[in-house]
View 1 (cartoon, rainbow, N blue to C red):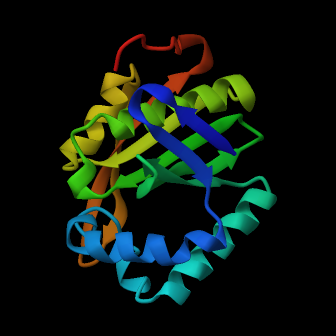
View 2: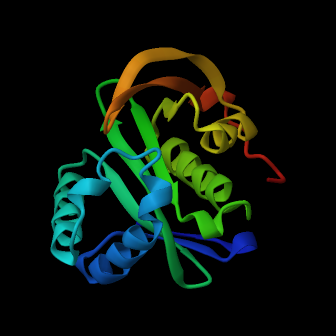
Length: 184
């Protein structure tokens, strides 16, 4: 999978083992910021841990269960996004993403999410795309709002973040509701 988003100089490419060093460095540099919202950071302590994650991602992709892509902005990796889960029985994709804090506020993740939604509806022919976000992650919650998702509800204590449980807000959009935004 490779997508190019012209107006933002953003490329999305399927993660591969050659990305391990760059992804580990980006993860390590972003660790303090990301730890606020992502529960897996303490498991990524080395390039080898990152390589195992990429191998798992590639197997899940081969098994048609998920898709993880590197986000490159001006040819530099700045984050990861994709479909954490592809539910083929119900035609649903669940989007997940993270972006290094120094690259936030540039519209990158909104453009990435839009490209993933287009891919889900127009290429994969799915019926629903879902984004779940920790209730207090206000920056991340703005992305589905900007893209016209419907806030559908709250899942109480949906995720354990180290020593506390956080509620998730669920956003969804259906194929027949999706209209490509002309401006992001």
